[in-house]
Image (cartoon, rainbow, N blue to C red; front, side, top):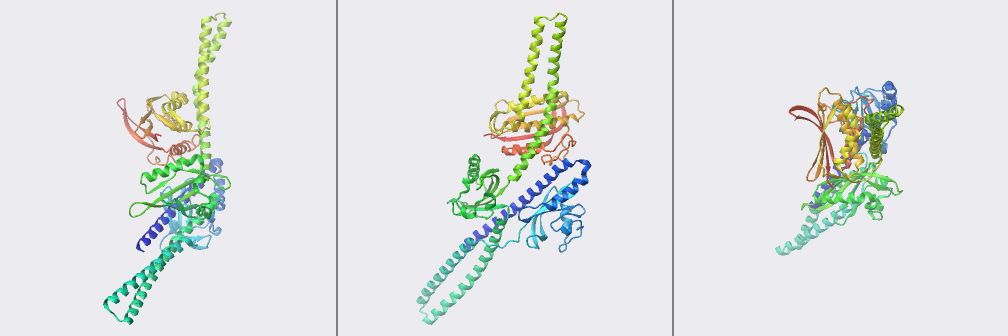
Length: 595
């Protein structure tokens, strides 16, 4: 009984942690997506239509709803209500709103202004589903351009449905224990009575007393178990109403023990179809992603991890739609350290993936503008040479001075420069290709190609490039995406060097092969990145450039591409010495695994 109780309490705690983790991630993703959408719209409105954009944003926030009637609340920095599900509150000031002795809203706004996004748990004024105050986990984040704070939350105490199979299992186990205890006590009592030759009437009294004591103890224990079961089942029922699916697998039999009803929202199949094994989850995973999904699971088991997180993968729904999934799994172990079950959740991130695709296309268009500028720099000299050769031949022909030697020299020069222009076009075409295939490619070749594409911009800004590129480093992945990442980092370095007064403008490129991976590093001497913003440079729409030149998407997409390649991209400021001169600059480092 004691061991069952411990296991029960352990599962309850794990489910509670999973729900809180899921709620925090979901609310953060929702607010970040809404803010990104608003920032996109702000670019369309422009600087001269700021008030018009504010009206649009307020209308959008008040009409927007997530699933289960969850809404967005918004306040300006002085606590004037911008958006709320309760329309009568819009326009009112709630700075002095108190819950007990605490100024709830004032604390939320002040905390949101100090932090770049924060989670909070508090008693909310109104749950739109019950019209009663409810405990709520919220994520709040400021929009500096509007001087607003946006937030959304998930209510965690408004569901009372019970999951019947868990309660029945615990009750059967309890009933069995009670019967066993009574039988054992009765047997021991009889033995004691016979040994001590007690009168028959005492036997009845002793048995009656033992039954009464055991019944009282078991009744108390049963109430505690029921109370715990109700708490656990309430937590489980939260997942039935959420956008996230909770699951539990038996490790040894590989049988699904529990899945929340919300599975039907994502896959279209019911929880009964999965529990009866009419449908198996592994058969829903996209065939192109299944091997990687299985590999990550096996690696987590082999590495003895307490939990693991799958990289996003695709599933096929009942109506043959493709959706993107993120999942997180805990490996539950017994006292001997053996895995007994797997508890986790899956979340539909299809909308996030589609949003990333839109951002990727925006980044590509911005990069194309820079590329066209680079090509114009590169073409200027060869076009001038072709024009000079052609006009020189014409002049010599008109004057009767055209010899075979000068003719062939001019023709060779024209052909040489024409081939150079053709190679530039090929490089540019490869850069803009929407090719998602993965292959093994030479890293040095990719970086050399980047430098060729940017050669005109590098020369016109008098930048010296110092290369330390190894010859024997091969990478498996999408080379066009890596070209895009390197192009963005180098372009940022060029922009930084343009604005510096240092006489020697330096850009260092280096590669290094490690035991289990590779390093690619880009270093300049442009003075480094402001320490107050260095932690924000990989956020979407964050830019230090003028709005006409920067979108704030380049480094964000670069970071996502490297993450999808299972690597890391980070930036630091460094002081170093080159040719006996001290410099300070930014150092961008890419870490990629070797496959």
